Length: 202
Image (cartoon, rainbow, N blue to C red; front, side):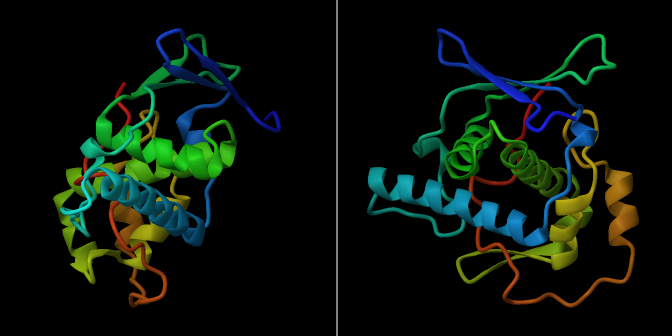
C-alpha cells in the first residue's frame, strides 16, 4: 500500500473528491483513545460553531449541526488496484458533513489516519441509530453521551464493510463477549453532529 493512498481534487462547485487506492474494509484500526479524542474534537468544534451563531440557545447533548459550518460536499472513491470500478460514497448529509469538516480540520482527511477516524466515527453513529439493540451500550450523562468501552473498542478495531458501515453480525459477535466495566475516564463526552444517523451515502 502507498504511504498515503489518498489523492484529493476540488471541483469548480467546491466538491472535494478523495480517491483512495483501497477498499473500505482495508482501512486500518485505530486506538479507542484516538477514536474518543476525534469524537470529542468534532463535538467541541460543532458546539463552538453553534455558540457563535446562537449564543443564547445551546443544547449540551445535541449540538445543532444544521446551524454549524458543515463544509463542502465530499465524494469518496475507493478503488484498490484489483477493482475494475470504484466504490462511490458521498458525505453530503449536513450532520455527516459537519463531522467530516471538524475531523478534516483536526486531522486532515487527506491522510489515511484522518480518513479512517472520520469513517469509523460516522459508522459508529450510524450503528447507534440503526441497531436498536445497541441502546443499552450508550447513555446520556453529564451533558453528553457515554459509550460503553466495549462499543468504543469495537468501533476502533472492527473492519468496515464495503459501504463503510459496521456489519451487524460482526458487531454482535464482538459485543457478545464478556464486557468490561465502563471506565469513567475513557468516555466520549457528547455526540458531535446532531442526533445519531449522519453517514456517507452510496
